[in-house]
Image (cartoon, rainbow, N blue to C red):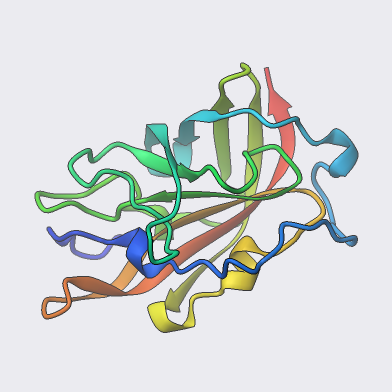
Length: 193
């Protein structure tokens, strides 16, 4: 089950470094799910639902900080996640990225239980155009901040995929940061009505 909640800032963006040279080019070889021919056109995602862990949250658009790291969603709103708007939107071909805080200064946040997701759990994203791509979790991994898998998260794929990211590991009081990230990898299987 979940570990003890910590009342600290997660700083997901400052610790999820982007390799700006990573191209969002398309490759061949996707297995299962929706392929490039069934992918959706670009549309802004507005809401995220993950029933397995009780998430029903609005989405805000995120960009990059001046140092090239991913912006964080606002820390003062515990039920808010953010979409990396410089990448693909959920449902387009490529890896769409959504981040959320593990906790806030006062308690659990939107992705408090993200590490509890398991293979086969579903994630639904409602988009501004009314479509709702549904993704199935393939795997969940925890990685040390210094070993963040930039290529696996942001690198090219040939089908619609989704990455969910939050902090994990131990909280370091000296730095005010967590030691790891939890990354969920999912692929699109259908569009809900």
